[in-house]
Amino acid sequence: MARITVGVSGGIGAYKAVEVVRGLQKKGHDVTVVMTNSARRFVGELTFEAITKRRVVSSQWAPGLNADIEHIALATASDLLLVVPATANTIARFAQGLADDFLSSLYLATTAPVLLAPAMNTHMLEHPAVAANLASLAARGVRFVQPGEGYLACGWVGKGRLAEPEEIVETAHAQLTGTASLAGRSVLVTAGPTFEDLDPVRFIGNRSSGRMGYAVAAEAARRGAAVILVTGPTHLDPPAGVSVVRVRSAADMHAAVMAHVADVQAVVMAAAVADYTPESVAAQKVAKADGGWTVPLTRTVDILAALGRLPSRAEGRPVLIGFAAETHDVLDHAEAKRARKGVDLIVANDVAQPGAGFEVDTNVVTFLEARGRETLPLMTKADVAVRLVDRLERLLGVPPVAGRP
Image 1 (cartoon, rainbow, N blue to C red):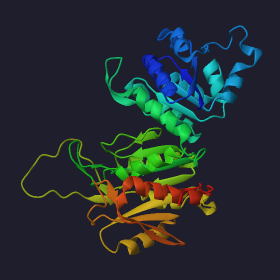
Image 2: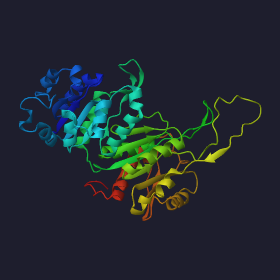
Image 3: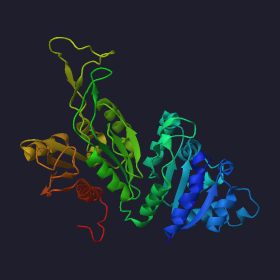
Image 4: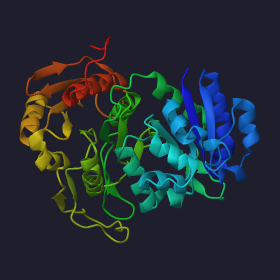
């Protein structure tokens, strides 16, 4: 049983925090609730006190509160700080290091893992200031239960609604019971295809589903890493506990990766990034006409090669893992790519093989490093991700965990 401090901030999703607390108790955890003043406008303290059998902390100025310097005492005793919902205001306080209420003071004082369940209006979630604050927290090791999409309290339909209580409970429980071998490490994973627009209707794309990259992100997060997932267009739901950056084009992905690379210790480039993009994008839909349509293409930036040329790579930072999806001479092409781009590990896969490559749940891969190769049999992409993150841990110098191959 772990001691979990649940912070409740002032959003309409605060009422769902009651279900989260109940779910954590059913898992056997001991829960203490901290509420902001705004949260008290949405749900009463007595509700939480009745189910936790503990006093709810809602003010740092309450009489007797400082007898034990309670935010320090609670910070020391907590095995996990979970904030549900995490509003834009609370996220900003945490990111900027403010300590103007009990919850923000607790956040600064605790050394326990921190898990946030953001919830807010769609446009608020997409605002650059909020995105920057989320990225800053992710780089410091904070993990997230991603908000869902659907009908919002404001009447809009979009992303921003609080994740379902069951998902929040399972994510918190997994973080406490899993082997946190990557705790304190930050990993950036790219996934999915990129779409290169021809006009407002048409684009050039590829068959990548994002499954492999999402599996890697999920496995790294399960082991306690702070994961930034830079994903191209895909219908997959992001793994629990990762920070998601959505992009469309190769240029978008390059910009997102370079914006976050200084904050991570490893990059896994699992995305199928377009090698070419149209020289120009038509402002209006190109009308169908007799004859052909010639589209001049230009090379996109090679993101993996750009990472390999970073000055910090002279000291081996960040660890770089790339993928090579090939249809012939697979290992020769992959080995040449590894050497040319200066990366630590290349994952080669023959996408022409049945059951491997795009749009399926299985894969056949070979890991290529300077010290040798290992070919894995056909297995699920989730199992490939386990083996890949094992290698990532070794490259990061993480001590091996008993029971793992």
